Image 1 (cartoon, rainbow, N blue to C red):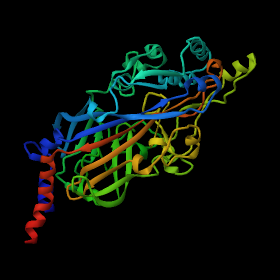
Image 2: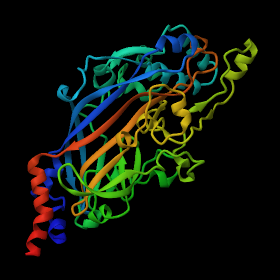
Image 3: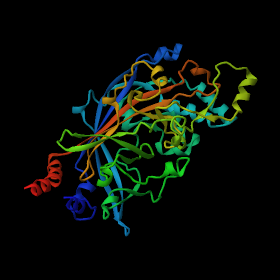
Length: 438
């Protein structure tokens, strides 16, 4: 059986497996849950603790399609993978026109960018922010917050503040402008050596990233993109998946063997709890530590103290365990990832917010792998997007604003395989066993 599976799972043109690999028949359900702010006025006026209500899911069907496929001479194949999302009202609680009261993300991003400049540029930006009359909270539709985006005055000047924001064309959306795009050029092993099947060789022509503080954190050795694993790794105690949203490889640890909803006997792997630990609790994560600027905030300073503080160099923040600063990956924006509802995070994150209820069954991050073929047959990729509110000194207009890691939304990406693929995979896995047992 193993020899037959190894032969069929080899990525090569004009094979049955190639067509499934090129255009996966799976439908990925991307479910989004927004945190609606119910006491925005009280937060702004008296600094009340934020009260959130979860609204969702708003569900999108995501299709993957590999393009620009080139087979190389070293048993690797290079390609791009386009992702396209379609809103599915039948699996959603409301239409995309539903309104959400949420944190003003472009304004929050502007706070952080002000901290990165020294006087006098910082003074000019502070003056602009103090007189812009922008509210810390806004009401936008789900469509605007996700893929359609909305116009924003701060981002319209983005190329001045940071050239990295020029591509946004003055618009903001958490997934703007990702629809119909890819995450770069990936080169993976074809599986001529089945123990290397789908392992990443290069990303954008590079053998490692140039993003994090150490070579170890920049490497993606023994990582796949999660759709298929070498069978030898699928039977191990740990698998690694490179996730472009995290700009890093994520480790998953074997939890148990179980039956999936489609009847496969699969090995469940859970995202390692070390992923979101800070360097104090897990030193190997030091290279992922926050690079967001830190300042000592004071609401009242004298004129001379104010200009003295403006000249100070900012150090970087250190967050308790349970979150990951994504600013290095996202053009310096103060976006923080965590598990939904701050599951497994330090209590301080939950203490700062009302309305969250972490639940391991509903909020953990896992994948189920069929071990004979290494195919991911079920999964729940769950992450929460938060924004860190970090007010610059001298920004008096927002004195009552909470300086916390503020939840905006959480999301789950699951997978649904069509019946014909399930039948084919089961035939491949179980028929040889049945025949050999006769």
